[in-house]
Length: 246
Length: 246
Image (tube, rainbow over all chains, first blue to last red):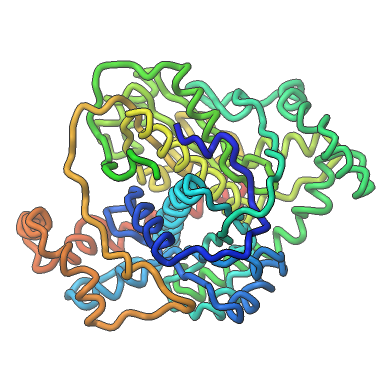
């Protein structure tokens, strides 16, 4: 059991109190125990404490205030550069400038990120995971001066919690678990999956505020629209090519 | 602190003892507390206990014996199907048949996977993370009957440990951490990063066995070659298109 997980919430407001380098490094070191492909550790972490750097990163994260308010911002990158430089210095011919290698490095980076999250929360720290990282990778690459074969895949804002948000709801377990084969969802099952979520007062308010008919429409028409997803997909593929992963 | 993490190793041999459905479901339920994009939970888990299904999955994992020997195999999938079906039933226009949506769902799935790993190990369970999942996704899709907008991104074999492997080495912390901007590696720094790893008896034996000159050559010429990476990259992109993510 990981006790803190039972009441975990995303923390977006932090106390005006530093996260010491000693504590941060201790957590990063522990997180490095995470399994990794061929024990290559295909990730790097860029630590941002400098206010000017936070301000330069903020637009990539749609200026969400936690980016500049958090004492520490961590950008976790898929990184095949270190391994590639090593190979070149050892008379070896590296072949990691391709999509599979990106996916392998991104996987390493994300697994490492989540172990770090579990550890940080056990220490009483709070974090916010910024999914915007892969929306605007080019801006982040520029600010953090990321070389080829390095691509940011996750950002965490980190600090001591200065809020106690209500825990968010989750789907029932049966909605995500399939026995032996994928059991496709009937309309009745979809209704059952989402009924509790749709009934929540906060979600009903969300629908009303956005002048929509259904909660799903808030997602498809406002939060994650087809047009934006398609434009960002193109940009992301372009950055993958430019960083040498395609 | 997560105590079990300090001595974590990959477990490939399991006792002949079941993992109860109650225990497994409890761990999956706790892992669902993991942060997720817009609280959409863009993942599904297919649980394999049936021996015939394990045998059908095994070739996709290069017949590594833990695939059939473990009491439980979990295949964790990036899943935008459930959300898409929901949207269609709620007069909403889903736009998740694109690369960004795959990356968002894969991220959700991998973060969930790693929380589960931390939880399972705290319970005394052992697991092996099978990176082969994205090497042969089509075989897995066929065996698990995965529909469009569902793609396997991680597999865990799970059971009670029947071995005590030596902990594997890790790079020094400074090798993965960068302050404020990415500090590119000088040849001397690369030497320092990999010196301890190259000196390990097990790695020296590995070089000798494979009749190579350097450890890096074992990676580039034997374990993860350019030709195989490129062929698998093409296959993976094909499956992404076929499952409707591109």
